[in-house]
Image (cartoon, rainbow, N blue to C red; front, top):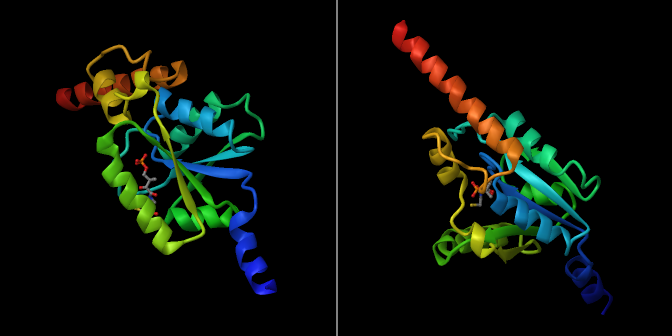
Amino acid sequence: MAKSRSSSSRSTKPVATAVFPGSFDPLTFGHVDIIERANQIFDKIIVGVLYNPSKDVLFTQEERVALIQEQFARYKGKVEVVSFSGLLVEFVQSIQSRVIVRGLRAISDFDYEAQMALINRKMAPHIETFFLTAREEHSYISSTVVKQVAMLGGDVSRMVPPGVAKALARKYREKKLLQSKGKRG
Ligand code: PNS
């Protein structure tokens, strides 16, 4: 009897902190909405920013973290931004959480997300993945699309927070300058 109480206590303890992991290259309004909604359910959201040196990213690790911190500066203690590398489940365990939050925009997201959730469960059965469906108005937004639009000089103000829009404009301005310098030799 005592054994069953102790083994179930791990999974029945209320969860105060959940992890919202991602690449955030860059943060979009879709991410912001999921973080805000998850924050109404959990006491604290740790935004886990993946550091993956082999992945080609536009923004550096520090820039991606800073853009999220800027957006959630007023959520002191409720939203924290932390870099992680390696396995997500190990990161979740290291901060004594057992919930991963992911957003689903469309059915097409489901295959990849379900596979990830199942692999994570295989590695760490006590960690659960919670899915929040994206708001309709955000269902077309992805970091990839945002970068494409910004690179071509389009308006991204309805897709990303103002700080991110400015950072994108600056990034592509710098890139263009570098390219034109390169061409001139
Ligand atoms: O924003 P993204 O790129 O869709 O986020 C993907 C992320 C960071 C959640 C995923 O790639 C991840 O968890 N990476 C860490 C490595 C890991 O744990 N892999 C096993 C599960 S597939």
